[in-house]
Image (cartoon, rainbow, N blue to C red; front, side, top):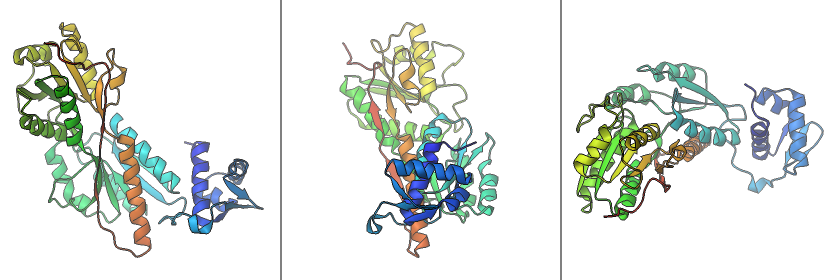
Length: 369
């Protein structure tokens, strides 16, 4: 697929600014485009006042002392991204990583891991043999057992690796592997704090259990709700059939009954619910409406993920993980490591957490007693 012109020109400008100048023929070869296309891009950048064009040469307008440190790889050096197939949440992470990598002059190679246990390992072993510069990966990790099973082989990968939206278990073999993840504890804290501030004292979490994010959300909610004296009653249930891989505890909903969540809310006297993830949230809100539970008049709803939460008939208040920012930070972390390694400098692994935001919409309101 042909690379968009804006992205291609951004890569050209980054390369020229890093090097000071570059031959158009070299740029064409590295971008895998014709010399005519590269020349046209250089001419457009020159007209925009972003660089100076000479005879077959593109020169930077940035003074030498202000030029960025050269990347660890020249324009065209490849970085591989490995993500699960059909994962809308991680699509935004990939977008953020791709933009940062291409701006730094790297070529991005995307590999999609199918829904098969252990699918990532052969992909990583193959790309490692292809001579790529580094690896950004978000393993599927449906269960804690699947996560643990991947620790050994991932720890043996000789490429520089950054885990995206994944934080391995503390003390595991991957504890010292670079990782960038949303602070999901803080995201749940924002949701509970918002609901408590509106007067809600009985809260239900309906969440999946088949991803690292889901498991982090469930653990954080149990801890936070138990520690908040304002929360009089709380419980955790599954949000959808097929969402349980790790044997989640709590009452087992009868998903054949579309009114199961409304019945649970009435049974516990709950006036608020936190729903993970977005698609499940939209479906459950519709089921609440069908069962005569008005949102937000009878029940305030907060979704977790904010991929499609704003598109509901009632736009959902949602915790919004900084998905694109996670990808961008992961890419910058890898770029910095490659640059330091190329300069012979030591590297200290990072475990980075990025804070999510709460986007307040129409699905939450103050409790009226």
